[in-house]
Length: 105
Ligand SMILES: [Zn+2]
Ligand SMILES: [Zn+2]
Image 1 (cartoon, rainbow, N blue to C red):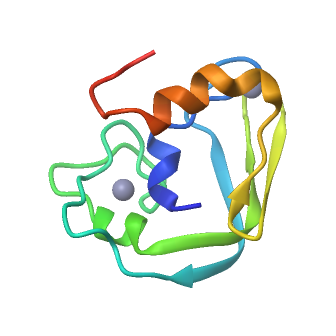
Image 2: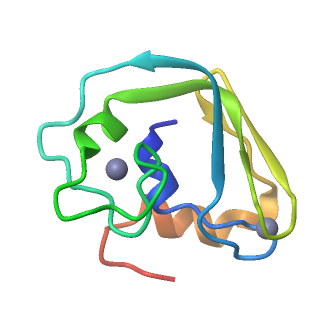
């Protein structure tokens, strides 16, 4: 899971945003050529992205092991083998962040 995803990810249980990321193991990967900076929350800065956020970093870090926690409802979602596990109820949200950038919820 790229760090960049944290910019799009809302809690599937309560809609909380932003979620907090804890990383146990991370790998460096090549960022895509046409990357765009985070829009609302940059997990690399752990805050709102500024005017020129270092989001090449968000995209060149693959979180292999770790967890994503919701500060609002306390839910915890695990990242194992680079895959974030979300409950099945989150299909709508998955569609939203997998879809085109312009498609909001
Ligand atoms: Zn970023
Ligand atoms: Zn929540």
